[in-house]
Length: 135
Image (tube, rainbow, N blue to C red; front, side, top):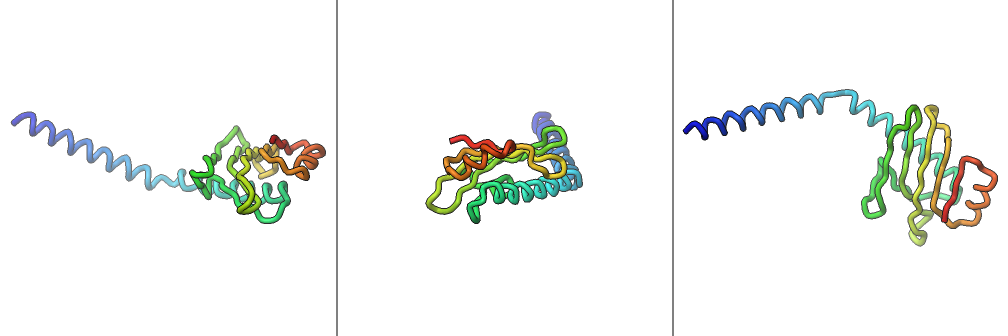
């Protein structure tokens, strides 16, 4: 009898604790503000990537539009800067190319690393210190 009462009391307390912590997590505005900031950074990264690759419209997989079959995409802080990774391709016939971009606090590009074999992009990387192309 004591075991049944103890288990019931434990289950009730554990359930209340989980419900309380879930409520606190859901109603916390800091998480939503951080996510809104991340979405803005990813939007800036998309614009920069389209301009840097310069091959017409790109299909982009990034932290806002993930596709697990293509690969993982991340966004994280590095001090005041943001690192955004993902994949892009120029169309259905092209393979997916990985990229890693470091953006400053004002969304200025500090570096962009891509895995691509496009000769025009490799030529641009010679004159652009922020762009690094690896095959």
